[in-house]
Image 1: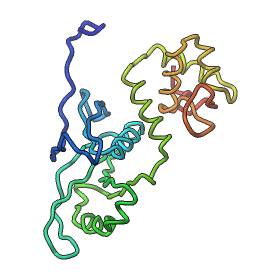
Image 2: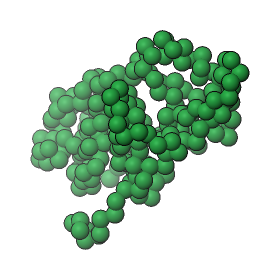
Image 3: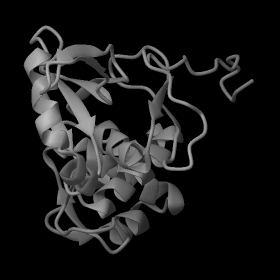
Amino acid sequence: MNPDNKPFSPPRVSRATRKIPVRSKASSRGIVVAQLPADSHPRRIQYESKLEHHILYLLLARRDVHDIWDQPPGITFRDGQGRVRLHFYDYLVRFSDTRRVALAIKPFEICQRIGFREYLQHVRAATDVSYAHDVVLMTDRSFRRVDALNAERLHFFRRHADDEANRIVAQVAQNLAGPTTIDAIVSATELGERGFAAAFRRIYAGVLRRLDEGEITPRSQVCAGRGAEVMS
């Protein structure tokens, strides 16, 4: 039983249509449990490599991502030699404006070595707009590693909900007259580690706005974000 006296309900299974082999010497495979706006309950989302793992956290950190379908239904297409083949995108992302984007994820050097961009052009041509409005290739050069690590940390903090701390940090943000540090906000709230986690979450919610780059730490510079105007 949890503190609210509600019985534990396990996360729902992945919606993947292609099952990923459990073991692989060449890649890192696993699941992330998350609840997106499209979900009524947390569910498992699969990843097949560390690169997919990083990109999944980056997607989960975005406020405009409504749904993520891991290993969505395959696309039948003809390759450059006219052979009929089947391709599975890594993620099908639906945004809050209803736009759908199919993601193909590959390390940059592998893309160069095997001509993956040319291959993907054939898959793209066979991908109907009813499936996805756009097809995007993401590599390890599509993002900064530190941003992925910040997103992974955000996911950890979101798993430990603290509405009281979120509300107190939002109230401090409303009264900010200029730039400050996360450490100063934590001191003002007297929440300690809870305050840092809440400030981290409020950055991604738009209540606080970062003024610097890199890893988010107590020394990070922030100011009030647009979200602070509507928070209570």
